[in-house]
Image: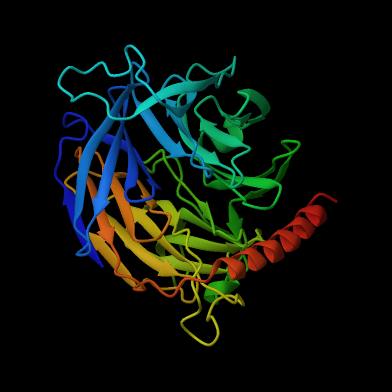
Length: 408
């Protein structure tokens, strides 16, 4: 594991609010967004010694204010941006320049050309602010979910720009939504909210299936007979709280946890199994408040003969982020196998894995991005495509049954 700070002027020394990466044939395409309303596209090349070189490709003037979140679609043909006004735009690549696309005279000419495909506005008549907090694509690229300060999660068809569902969050009960995660195979999504809770909601009808805010804690041998509050409240400074499902949809990792009066007092993240959202399966203690979880998309073979945590025939790697550090875990053990801190002078804002698992790219309030590289097979041996396909089909069958039971 090796880290590199990419010391280039990403957005004129303004904070880099969001970052995403896409694997191309011979390089990686990186997106960054800023508080100045711009999204920039970059070419990232990595040599055999895991040294990165970055080249400017394109500047897009997306908004007159902050672009809080950017995400490539799973199919790779689009990316989505969400801004402070509640506007979501999808963008596709175009074969020639469009007048006014690059409006910064200090930048070189665009080498790639992108145009807006659809524009979608997240509005709630009873809310004064509609700021986009988080975006999440479903794995098949057919749905795009937006968590907003309009006290709603909006479900869009990104191809047509049609609003499919608006799921209201009762502010008096839950506060504002802080992040969203979509199951890759089941008919539900998770919303983290300000007031110490996680909401499980059905996609197809918008019905609230469960609220997770407290639980007995048998996973840490707690002798308490009273349910424990699980999460940090509205005093937690970071509005962004981003959970994540594992690539098979069987596990959910939730940040921003906090326990009192147990053997694991302090800050935590939690692992939930998809067949039991009522109580965490495992607790991941951590030194400070966690706010972001990102799974490596690669499926790996087991390192042990049998996983110590879950009865899975494969393993996943994931990263848990605090403001100033990142911890690396896998699904075979409930303690980190690595961590990094001190990469940035400002707080971390966002992060994403490359699709091949070769590196993790991180953005920060200090205006820079950093990369954590992994040597070939350092994280493990990847499964082959046939094995992954079979395991995905099995997970899809299993999760469809779980969803059917929940709906009864």
